[in-house]
Every structure is written in structure tokens, then in C-alpha cells.
Image 1 (spheres, helix red, strand yellow):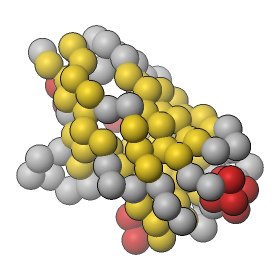
Image 2 (cartoon, helix red, strand yellow; image 1 turned 60 degrees about the horizontal axis):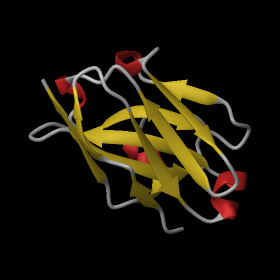
Image 3 (cartoon, helix red, strand yellow; image 1 turned 135 degrees about the vertical axis):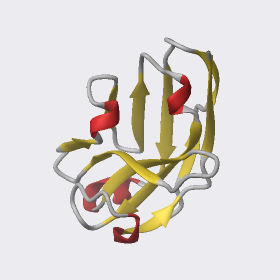
Length: 119
């Protein structure tokens, strides 16, 4: 499966961005799709996921600020109240383990999109 992220950019603290992950329809019918992020010099960390039943999962660090949704062809990460700590490259990924936070459980990855939050 080929995943393509878009929507990253530069935003001021307190602002909002929406990231998109485009894939084939088959991906969302049978896969769990997750968002991860990796800040410079840090490990890649789980942000949110949505499984084939549209059940959603979130990291505690973004709870209440980010949400995830999907339609037939894309998964979206809606980000609000952004802070400098949210600056990172954001990746979407697809796998067959519902709600997993482990990068090793994801089989397919996008190329990433940069999100930069200025203070």
C-alpha cells in the first residue's frame, strides 16, 4: 500500500492544522491507520490511530487537542491548540493490529510531512 501525507506547514502557537493521509480504499477497509511523529533527535512516537471499525485511539499528550477521522480514501489528523512541542515530522502508517502504538506493528509508511509550530 502506498500512503501519501499532506497538509504540513508552519503555524503559530495556538493555531490549527489538518493533515491528510491518502491511500487506496482497500487500506481503510482492512487496516488500522495510525499517525506518528518524530521530532529532531527524538524517537518516533504514536499520536493517534483509527481502525477498520472507525474506533479511535489517542496518545495522552494530544488528548483533547487532536482528533482523527477517515473517509473512503483518506485519514485525517485534525490538530488544534498547537504548541512548539508539536513540531515534528508526521507520518501515517497502516497495519493490521487495531489501535497499536508500536511502530513494528505497522507494515506501510508514508514519507512524512513537516509540521513546525512557532512560539
